[in-house]
Image (cartoon, rainbow, N blue to C red; front, side, top):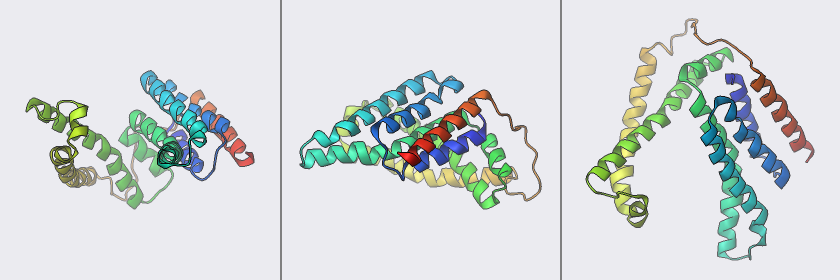
Amino acid sequence: MCIFSKFFLVVFANALLFFNLPIWLQAASYAYLCLLFLPARRWRQAGMWLAVCAVFVAGDACVLLYPDNLLGHYLLFLFSALGKMLPVVVVAALIFSTTRVSELVYGLRTLRLPQWVVVPMSVLFRFFPTIRHDYHQIRDAMKFRGIAVNGSDLALHPLRSMEYIYVPLLNNASNVAGDLTAAALTRGLADPQRKTSLYGLSVFSSDLVCLIVGLGLLGCLAYA
């Protein structure tokens, strides 16, 4: 999928935040975003996100049936408030799993965005995978020492989990951000001279389908 189609998906997902969608349009929008994993052959992710979205759509449709009490307010927040963020999360997962940093930088530079946008975006794009890698290393070290071997131990001992996981993870995050920024600047990312790129603008049939269906859904959104 072309990088500009992914930029369009970012705009599409953020546009959904500002509208109160009917259930049929919400289900169609979620299905549209989840099925975009298929051209990249991410079958497992497509199935997983379809299942998650189906739960949120069903919960959003049934949440008003619950009584006006604490449980009802909690379910309303879970399915309605958090469900509004779900399209953004799905698009972020799609972009992070199918896009390289150099491809993102090429797309941002083609849009003639300034360096103070390109450099932070490229650092941010590598930040979260690095943090996830550090998290798995911390969990492996904890399991090796017999600390919080499974997920139930983490839930039963939240303070200990915070001490062993979040404290070193947050402490390391500042170092990772500094290292990634230094690496990007060393590679000449902030050099104002004209850059060359191995990537070119290639539009596939999946990009056209993505654009047409997305614009159709936005049109339905405007008239819903």
